[in-house]
Length: 369
Image (cartoon, rainbow, N blue to C red; front, side, top):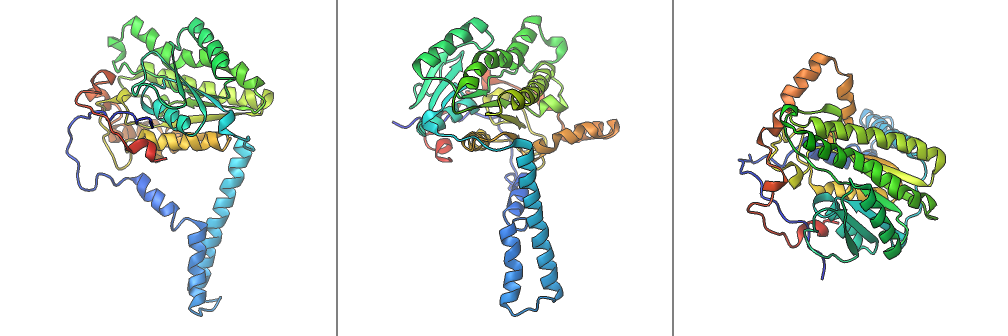
């Protein structure tokens, strides 16, 4: 019986305009597959030539120059990726043992179910039971990733039951969603332990296994744009996400020297449509659309399948978010007010309210792959 996709979580009622699905990401995607694609760009001069237009005619020269510019841009992009990320490793899903923390729901569960269906061996680590019960190819281990002793016992059990791990996806996270003045010390400890320290613990636990694997390995770190810009009501979460982004980059530099066969993938999404941020309103859906977990999962899975190093940012602004830090302080303040980033948590409900009125979808997310 095929596994069911994650449940559809209830969202606060809101009035959408007819152009709500339109976003800058959609526009860029359309242009990237049309006017900014080398194949389409070269079709134009070929069509002119088919109409017996001379090679030195102005429209022909302009179309050839445009096609050449687009082609050179794509070639430069490919060279940049090769210089930045190196050669990919060989990936055979039948040999891969994938460990996913926080994989009982949301993005982690979606990735786990897809890989389970495709023949990989998947271990899900979480403190809560899996939302969909058992899934083909997925083994659930109840584990608190902030507990080093539990992690050690579960790691030994995974290696005994499933084999040597080759992929580690650090996805576990919690959101408390309170201003610093309202946070208690236990809440701060729990947030930083789950969102930051657990990454150190899982890496120290599973990295030795990835290092001795004959087929190499891949480490995926799920961070957030909040780690770069920060936000009111998310001091603990932002600090942790900034920390794991820095951890990932430093670890990638170390592995390039000591274990070049291990690939690293940094995922920096904007607001995800998961119960983690239930209730948070996106002030501008055109510039900062809510990201569906299935879209992030596609990118993560493609990076793992291709055995490559990668930096994944979604939506479009997430890929350019580092430029925010070089803006003058005044422009940063204006950008924050326009984006409404510091007001977004005013309507935060969190995971506790995510399932009110929710019901299960039976067909959509998994079939998207």
